[in-house]
Structure formats: C-alpha cells, structure tokens
Amino acid sequence: MTLRTSRPLLHPNEPIVVTVAPASATVLPGETEQLVATVTGTDIDTVTWTTSAAAVATVAANGLVTVLETATTGQTATITATSTEDGTKSATAIITVG
Image (cartoon, rainbow, N blue to C red):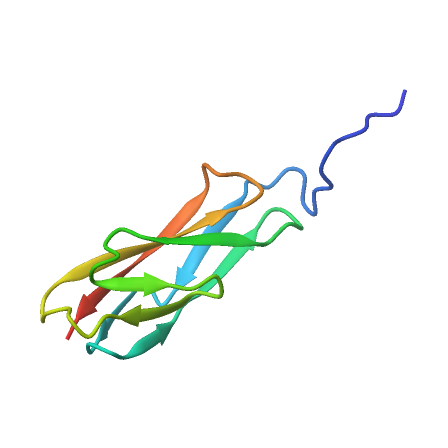
C-alpha cells in the first residue's frame, strides 16, 4: 500500500517552526527595517506578513517594515510572519518607534 500525501514534507517528523530576525528593532519615523522569516520542517517556506498597528508601521510581502512619518517615539507594532503551509505556526518581531 502506498501512502500519498497532499503536501510533500522535507522533514516529515519535524514540526514546522517559524522564526523572524531581527526579533526587535527601533526604527525612526519614515525609515525601514528588513525582516527575514525562516521556516523549517517543510519545503513550503513562504510566509504572510501582518502588522498589529497599521497606523504605526506597515509591512510588505517581502518583510520590509516601514514606520509611518506620523508615528511617535515609543509607539510599537508587532509584525507577524505566518507560515502559508500551517497557519497556526508564526513568529513575531517588535518594532519600536525611535
């Protein structure tokens, strides 16, 4: 009997783990910070990016975070990278306005 799966796994016994680097950054208004997500435990290594505070910082599909000009010192945004393979697996970075 052959077992077929709908998704090929690079490491079938490893859990999917998402990490984001850097885990935190202080960014001035109008400036950017490049975040990098790493996904292990699967060969589908893409993520979706979201922000908790769109009035403070936005995040592009490639992980580039832009702090808005209107953001004020001390405000924060949590940026989340979520595995497209398993939406329950994610990691965050905290962006603080400097």
